[in-house]
Amino acid sequence: MIYQPKTIITKYRVSVKNLAAEALKGKSFSNILDINLNWNHEPIMVELASTLDKVNAKVFAKNLLSKLKKEDCIVKLNLNQLAAIEDESLKRLLKKLTKYNQRVQIVFNDTVEIVNEAFAGLPEKLKKMFIKEELALS
Image (cartoon, rainbow, N blue to C red; front, top):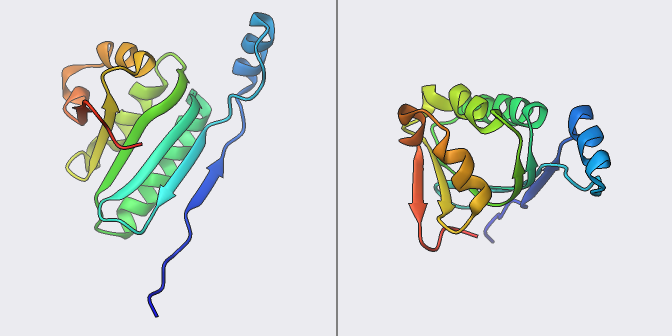
């Protein structure tokens, strides 16, 4: 019998700044960062969905760095399901992960406008972590 670990889904709290801004825009409060992990593959597949803000990016980076320090693994981070990226949050996340840039790959599809906009504003050294794919992992 083969042991197959479960997929883990983690939801982080929404930042107060985002809650206030979204309320003023008349939007719902369903902008929590969803993280879907699949430990069964090599590389480890991580999908981010919903909203990436500064608070969630910091917590997620801390948890991912902890995993990368403990294990010699490769992580593919899929951004295709993100609905919003708060200013500078992607940049901050990537800066924290640069120490492991050989083991972390950021995957996204060219058609994901939110990610394309955030990608365009990144410094060249952070852009090297990205893999643009026509049909990125979903």
